[in-house]
Image (cartoon, rainbow over all chains, first blue to last red; front, side, top):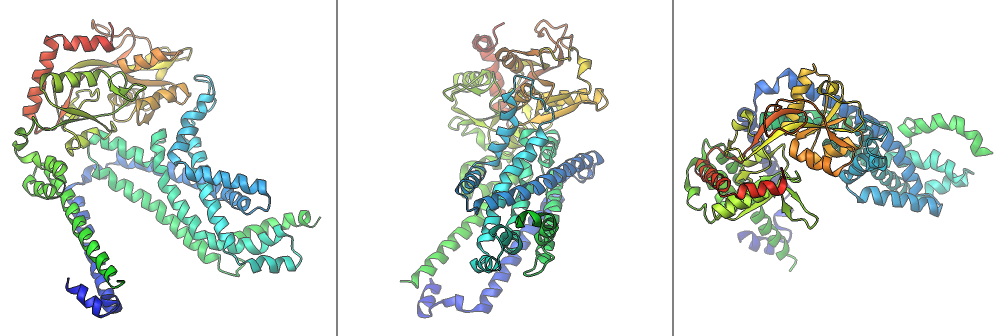
Length: 293
Length: 309
């Protein structure tokens, strides 16, 4: 109540005092760290069974799951970014047909849960064959890669479209005025800048892709959460395997953010060393002839 | 006017902040209570904030819940669907052997209200011990490992682990499973039986664990697994509904029993209702009720409804 009269007499009140706000912020942050740190220390000292944690049997199972997830992420990541690039280009296409198809694609894959998509691919698709006749007998991992790719290509596509939209109109106009075709201007001028714009959003999405692999437990992919659930239901001890789960996911996601940071540094404005600049540099050597004809 | 708004918001935030802290205290308290080592402390935190839930967790240290048992609704944790034990008909009503037994025991014999709560099977025991429900009725096999964490009622059903395969597959005996992939439900004794088999084959058996038994059945139809290891009655229901799905033949562990099914059995198991280990009084009441429905014929009636001999 005292603060009310104070703020009435002094417009802005406490918010005008930067130093105080800063100190309060520090106090809140420190309190948060203390509370969480204390809770963690308590859990680690009372709840975690270190004999089980360091058991080689469990370590081996988590390691297998970890490398499987890394493989799935690596493949889905490359595929979803490549396919997402096409989706993004489709979204800005001057062709109505392409634009609408790309838009429909994004609406569907962004508008339905990944879990649903995984069920369709894993449980639904094989049922199009007669009982027991589906030709691929190890369908879980391929289904996972297809699901993750289709889903995340929609998000990457939107990130790339956003990146392209954020490049000033004048860039395209200037390139066109130099006699470039629209496609050429896109590739040589707009896309390298759009890539830089979109990189943070794409990186964000790819980190979400890593975490989305946890859903694969429901289609019997022996990934990290599956191992956790199996150990928890056998040992009836949640915290010990949870420590493994936490560390393994962070290893993957933090490496991914390092990679994204590295890519962002490399693709500075106006530099040729950008990832896409480099890629289009490679492809333009072969593609030029076709463009000019 | 505009000066008032930040104050309102601040007051709101303060209120939320305090509420949030209480909630955190409540959660931590609930955990304590469940453990049973310093329950008094935990019960307090839970009660202040969301009475029913926290209160349950805090009960670990005394028998105070004995008094209000008659007014409380018994919540039953169950992994649904698991036909014919617990599943939903087309209208969405929960039916099944366990459901009818629950009706006969809790409502018929003990005069209690009860309700089923859906939960995943693999986390069902921790969930019971976290006081998310009062008992487990989920076609749960009594075994030593589970009995370390929960107490079981007297057995109310006998089941056998059996193997389903597709007709015309080249799997015709137990040994043929070596090198194959089998589907199971996560956390079940079917999974345990598969793991035993895997050990017997020196690891030469791949196990795919599904969240629900229906996932494993789908995988069999979809050529993802060559066999499903699961309780006989549940598998029988599925085999009856799907042409081309058959039991693996052979003499199993139950071959010399009268009630043994006429196909390969991997294990013999008995189902029980699971209780928290501090719930002895209630468990005894339920045991009494189970004995009573066996005696007065209700049990046989229910049994015959789902498993005609």
